[in-house]
Image 1 (cartoon, rainbow, N blue to C red):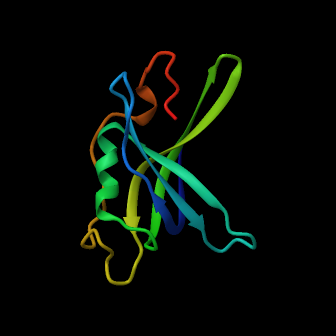
Image 2 (cartoon, rainbow, N blue to C red):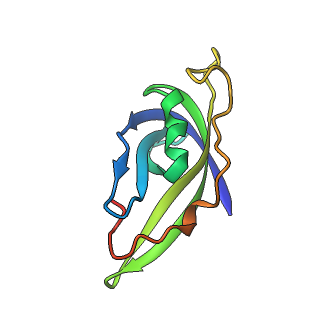
Length: 118
C-alpha cells in the first residue's frame, strides 16, 4: 500500500553505501497542517537515491511512500521507503518542474543479510 505526505524538506543527507553494496539516502520532511508539525525521516533506496539530486532543503514537496518492517535479533523496525517525490513550489522547484521518479523494482525486495541498513 502506498501513502502520500506533503511538507517541507528539512534535511537531505549524503548517500550511504554498506559493505553488501546496498545504498540508501535519507531525507526529512516537516509535515504541514498539523497542530504540532512532525519531522518524518524517509529513505530512498538503491537506484532511487538519485531522485534527491534535484531537490534542496526548504522546498515544499509531496512524497509517495510505502512502509516496510522487519525483525532483527528480536527487535522490530519499520522503514518509510520513498517511491516518488514531487515539488510543490510555485516556481516549479529545483527539479525544473518535472516529477522526479525512477522506474525500478519495489523497494522492499532487498536482502542485506545481517547488516542493518541504518
